[in-house]
Length: 257
Ligand code: NAP
Image 1 (tube, helix red, strand yellow):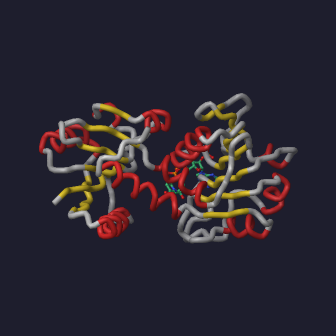
Image 2 (tube, rainbow, N blue to C red):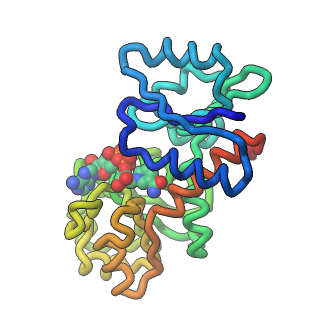
């Protein structure tokens, strides 16, 4: 039997054990998936102990350790380096630890599923946080000509992963984007009546597609408004599922380019 798990601090509400159990069942993998809660004070030492024990084939990593593990690993994939966060670790048979970011592949799968062609187009990401970093990397690698990031604290000339930061006020003036992505928690259950952009501003931005990193509720007000405006709309469920699928691919020996 192979052993997988999730490394984090407080993991009580994680969906990962269920996702990985489903994938392993579908693939006929004889494995288990456990929650590994480590305190901040000892996480570095505990991680090295885990590495030396050679028990796990793979671990996912969540908040607050997605950056913490980076200097502890032998290799980091180019995508994880760009994003600045590791959410998947492969403990290889030759004793190495390799860090990946599979949220990146989750974003690619989400865009692919909805046939969103961003090459040469403009994207506007809402919120300069962790999810935004995976979207920026995947959208940039997909050939977007321009990516803007809306942030509540944007000041003139600021950038986020080399993308210009824009204020929400500036979106009320003349601004265009082909793709809108909500990477804020605004609209997440239970605050389902909240949305990061008014329908009127969304209409004026003139986008053809809207993606929401949120998956609970299935349809946020942001996505309802997008649909009402005739836009392609999709929630973050495919991204969530696909990041887990890609982690299993990596643990089974698949190597990203
Ligand atoms: P995060 O690192 O905390 O970043 C969220 C960003 O949203 C913040 O940095 C902030 O940016 C902005 N924000 C926060 N509160 C806001 C508010 N009240 N109004 C406007 N903007 C606000 O969180 P995250 O990890 O990126 O997660 C963001 C969302 O994506 C969550 O709903 C999470 O569940 C979801 N998510 C989904 C997946 C998936 O697989 N589908 C993966 C990761 C995350 P500024 O301060 O710059 O405005």
